[in-house]
Image 1 (cartoon, one colour):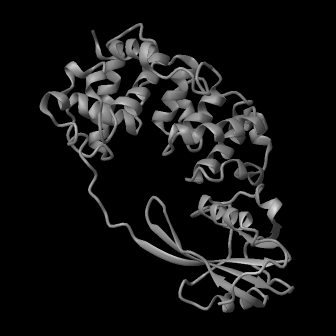
Image 2 (cartoon, rainbow, N blue to C red):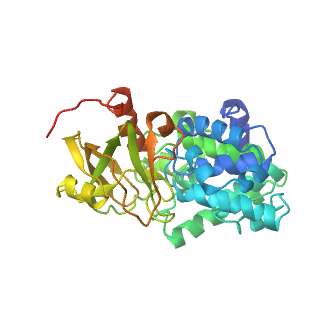
Image 3 (spheres, helix red, strand yellow):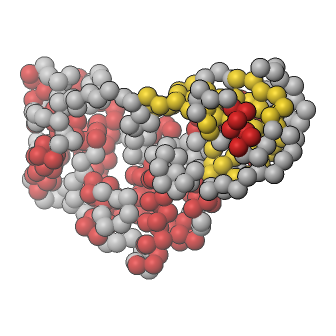
Length: 359
């Protein structure tokens, strides 16, 4: 039996069938799930997906919202450019495509934030288009099964993988593209995993090059490791009458468009940074440091809890706002900042007149 048919047969019996974005032909819901699932595990995505859809049930609803309204529903998923592109994409679909998704993968791929593999997945699930996908999990499946050497992120290697993907689809004229596409995703996510592939249950194990040669851990060829740069910063939790000062990040860059805490050099006196904001610290305590890893660097954070007197904030390039503990839940906060503030709220340290050690 051909590769693609073995995948579809296996998917029918052993694949995933009850995920919230399955069993639909709605390209909006399919697109939303595909974007959320980039770089993020299924278990993490499910509650975000359901909450996002409840607030923005259609592409028109998403397009009509402001970016400030959208970001709180994405905060915590990371890779925030995805959310900005999602919003831009919805607006373009409404403006250029009369609110309907483009009819094929070629045109879907012209939209903001949608690459060839994501476009093919949307077209396959929504329209049954015979367009193969090639995401990270599928690259691993193809590299192992067909014995493709080389870093799959390199252009020449990726082109070989795409050629193989097209060949498998073309070999089966009546292929069920929904089942095949989902089957490839399920195989890569559940059996042909990075660390411990379950070859004993794999539907294509008999013809797999990596299994035959015992090279499951060698393929795909690992990417050359680079030293992860380290950065440090101090975050200031400034309190006044039970409210925390937040500042909005620029739209581009790390945590673009999210609300976070004022920062200063990790080795500087935080009181100087407070004074530069036009405020005066009355007490301060250093909290437990923590780290957060981004795609290209690791950030080490030294947080300070500082009570300040009433004062007039200096004008800043980015918006600033005093937010009480109840309002924090509605803010679009980066995951580590939310974790820090939630911990302080739970401990009662953001309440008016809360006492904490002077340092």
